[in-house]
Image (cartoon, rainbow, N blue to C red; front, side):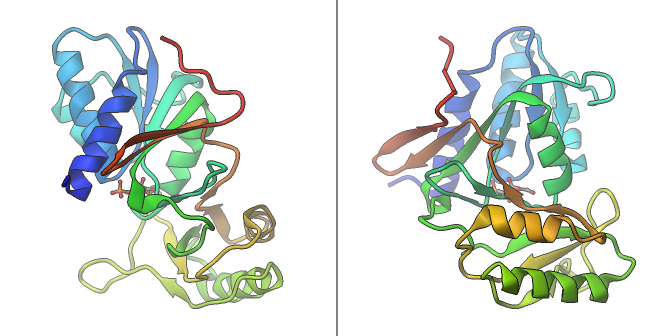
Length: 239
Ligand SMILES: O=C(CO)[C@H](O)[C@H](O)COP(=O)(O)O
């Protein structure tokens, strides 16, 4: 019986098969992405040539410690591949992300990539998104007003539930790398993710919504029975 962490590593190592010499890569955030970065670091130490854009300060520090060559999207606006974890995914490759608070840069980097591949253990697979509280990144100014607006818009989109300001370990508000706040929306289920995304995203205080729709091209999902590959209609794995 493999532990959840071993399953995450298995998915991450599978994604490493996609990496080719000379690629420009987006590096995700979180414990699953960490396995990928560490394994990539070992390949770089053995001579692989890649240039990578991290999606968070935590990932940048880890990649730097492994001597992985780093750049920014300002210098390389298009990437070949981004590999990242997810908090939830459904069978249409729709995701909830942002459990680690890096959803804004994760979405920018994934969208700037020719392909985005998700790595996860099978506890992240759901029939309907929403069991995991949906993270919404908001600017600190007008927090309570934005929170109330999100509640109203979400309710119209069929999603009700508590919306909580994320706090850090010491009980103080959690700030993202961009000095924004996160509202975790405990909806339980999201019947129409596209409708909800559109409804919340257009509010002025909202920076980004943790729904990744039409962004992921494939997912490697590791379970006790083996590794499952989910593919979008257009994704082809190059051998
Ligand atoms: O979206 C994320 C960070 O913002 C992560 O990818 C997500 O939270 C999954 O994390 P983990 O791999 O640790 O389960």
